[in-house]
Image (cartoon, each protein chain N blue to C red):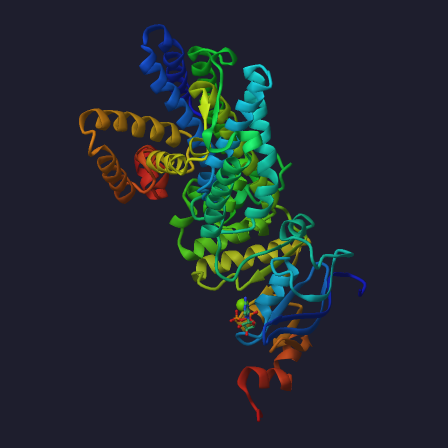
Length: 313
Length: 239
Ligand SMILES: Nc1ncnc2c1ncn2[C@@H]1O[C@H](COP(=O)(O)OP(=O)(O)OP(=O)(O)O)[C@@H](O)[C@H]1O
Ligand SMILES: [Mg+2]
């Protein structure tokens, strides 16, 4: 990461940290949801953007973390432990699932993950003894931390997820993941342990939504199978990453920020049309900027050496 | 296993449904040699590489590399044991830079990977392309980068599948010069190549595959005049 990028990141974090001092609860809630989407988008970016395994089911890990968090809070665990365990439980569940599904390629993996989310929702609906089924779990306010705790925890998760992606991206692990995305067979042929790498990326990318889900349930104080395992959450992760720039460090941050702000604006101005307008905007970006908004910044890299030589020497 | 062999293959079989791509191949590669593998289109040359490199794990038989059996091992395990191969159709990583293409192929613990990658690129005069994406290279450059890529692990043996196909004459010369240079330093090569001048020039020993079986072995001059080889290539005296 360049010094300039670090400076921008530090400024963003400082602004986000100071916001609760001046902003209304409404704006804090908006920002909390933005942090949540940044963290989720980064998780999706890790497995799907960097490794190329497109998941349509990452909400499953969000839901598992949310249920784990809700139940642990009810059992009397402190909120922070519920968040940590939410991440660990989602990661633990993801390992055997990854072992099975990561053998599949392309659309087969995507569909298997979609199926996973559906199965998880059905299990949550039918396992009434544990989850109270469709009627859902309401958490007593006495068990829950206040808005500012949720706000800062979600902010921390967004930062941690982005830092994790940045660290992986610049290191050997990230290079191997990107090689897998480009050509898995060739990667294996030049010494990349594809199974171990894919599984590590998958488990990390499940732990993040696990923690996010636990914080989410502290924030909403209510959880049912369709809010925990919402297909629309998957779509949002994918849309935001693609919008910002798949496989990049800042793309998911930018994508989550722009999409949420524009959606908020469109919803206020054109309540009936806001989703259609958002869809049109996404279409324009995908058609004309296939690398997402980040590709505007990354143009230089694509230049051939003749051009680089002329410009920079 | 014959004394001095680095690779020893016994009775290798591979069927694709009805097609017997390899039917009982026996082959020995002397340590430090350059061995040629030739044969008509579809005779099983690439399949042989696929099996030996671990990409294809459906074969039966025995493959001994450096004294240990490797049939059934994963490609990355075989690679880290010192046996590398290139693909007939170039498979550089398109959205990785040329430098990243090389570094990813080094051993994980290798701290000097970056500087050696730059050195290798300089040796084939591609140093200005270090930051260029793989997809922005010409096809010939891609094949050359794929060759440099496997050198990053300093393998003791390299299987080259038509490395010069689609490469312009200048780069082609660079490629063969490098093969000769590395062989002088002790690297063993098996080369699939359709250009017989190159085979005659480089290879001490040549194996000829036809319809999945070895029909001749020996030095190029002997192999060239072998009746069965002429028949396989030109269909002479065929019923
Ligand atoms: N994946 C596969 N599935 C089915 N048949 C295959 C497969 N790979 C190879 N074959 C068949 O096996 C035989 C040997 O093919 P192979 O590619 O090894 O030949 P080759 O000697 O490398 O030919 P060329 O000189 O054209 O590269 C051919 O008949 C081919 O059609
Ligand atoms: Mg071939």
